Image (cartoon, rainbow over all chains, first blue to last red; front, top):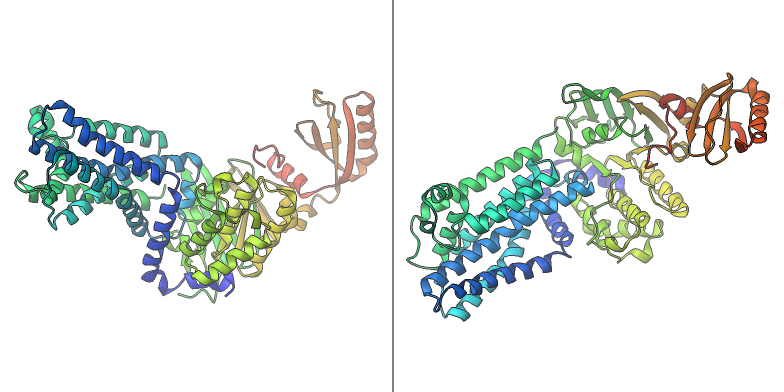
Length: 262
Length: 317
């Protein structure tokens, strides 16, 4: 087959159906290979930061109460699952914009949804091992046990998806790469410091707790905890809704940015 | 939805206005047939990249149409991405990819089947003499080899339109010839090849037709020969000035002049050849110039006349 027949073949009805999966598979391989040099380091940093939180917060206590150990270690899972999609992804995109490769990647014939799902797959691959290691370390260190229920699957998928889509929206809706980097840094500051993920929102001032009640991060922690523990969270249905709404907002903003032509 | 019939690329009165007033493209109309290698020349900021970005669906024209056969590329940017392969001027994002892997993956992303993409990848690696870097990661490649790998990524499964933005940047002279052979083959296989550059000397030997763009407007179009035809009664008098020398006062018979570094390139009428030689000898005697060359005008002289720029004074050419 000569390239000209290849060129003709890419046109036609195959374009719509099978090409989505072909695009998804090839783009996922591309994305994974593209961060091949960084991925091991990202996973190690994720594990170290997760383990650091799990072990470090014990230093506040003579004897870490089980409830606290459960709270912290399940919160760490959320940090592990969202870090790559929300923070690292936008930094990569900022690098692509600065290096001038962003236009080339956007000009590849991969459906926008397939490209987004590819990146979501990568963030799962980068986040799940660290989350599992953090939980295992917590079990070994504090002798606690998690009650894993099937709801952990949608909780992990939705939490990672929402984090990834919010990061995706930031990556593509904010044109200036320096602004993308700055906002990503601010998000680290806010998510790690001022979101009730590792601790309950009752520890926060009322006004900050009221804000967080409408942001996704506390609710990500709630749905993940509901999948790993029994009896320490309530209002899980509302939390799913809020996380899903934020995921939809991120998706809509990203879709708008990616289909917008200046 | 086959493209077996009309496969011509057409841009019709394409106009792109930024911020309500900056006309980056102003009524550009051109057509390119399958198999043609078409040069798009112009100084930096002329509007070449803006035009290309509209073709591949990254920008939307303010006015005008861009079509490929029956397809409206403006209305359906997803189709534009399917039908157009694009090599940007910037380096490709392949630092963590092995060369062969990057080429194969791009072929797969572009819709190629595994076996054909593998075979074509190996063919291109051999044709461009890239074998020794087959399994080298991009971060360890020189700029020129990386550029060639980028070219193979674009041509492993080419679109109906292949857009190459300065494909020979940093490429050594030997492999440049190999690359031009492959560009010609893309044309022979039926792709319409856009060659975006300001390296006029290379274009003269490589394209079937070309357009010169300046200030957003298409100011000339034709074959290299037809564009040179109107300059046939002129000669190029090139003076190599002494380093540090100021541009000498120009005699009245000099029609155009451009200075790039120590080179002063002028155009004179054929009938003024004797006067030109006399002037050049005088400058050498005054130690203003070191040597001179008098010859037929080239496409570069046409380009200088049209744009006021030498092809190599734009920073990247």
